[in-house]
Image (cartoon, rainbow, N blue to C red):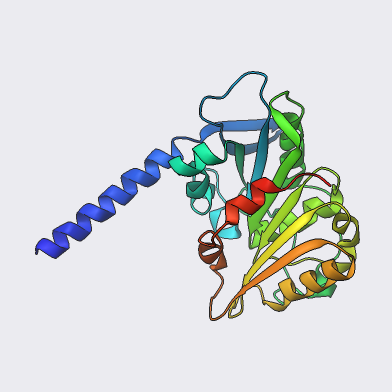
Length: 256
């Protein structure tokens, strides 16, 4: 009985901790015409006027789509909101939320092979994301040499897509269990640093998608590292965030 009560207490404490971290992210809506993008943003502690900060754009996976403007914080938000990390890596961190039935990248083939990863018209929620991050980058408080994009699963595909379309905007990209058309990677290879993560037992997005992307980026001369987790399924982001030096690497990158 005592063990059960302790477990309940720990779960309750964890829920309160998660809620406290979520509350650090302000709720906003970005509206253009009749389209609305819901997003959360966290600012550095002791946000100083006139000082420039790095900016991180985080793209969630399909399972976190919605309209509650909260579910997108389920994976990844905690690492930036951690008090130690907030002090060590002061940054502007943005988590947009893709509506249900939409995609960051309109990618549906189950194989995620090269034939399905063709370049598509720039449309839908991602156009709002791009306008949003530009509006933040245009402020005096963003260090334009230290703008990063990362995402998992559907967000990993969106990460590739954004750096392929706008290779001069981002200093680094972290696609986690994503996929890309490797023919599009030549442009970002010249100016974007990459770290790619994937589980080798992923039943949703085959690990071969990340292997292909890594080989192509190496061939194009990119600054790229690839991390593959043996026996890990689709939730490779859980392992990614635990890697020593993960945030050290991200925030050390500057536009080439």
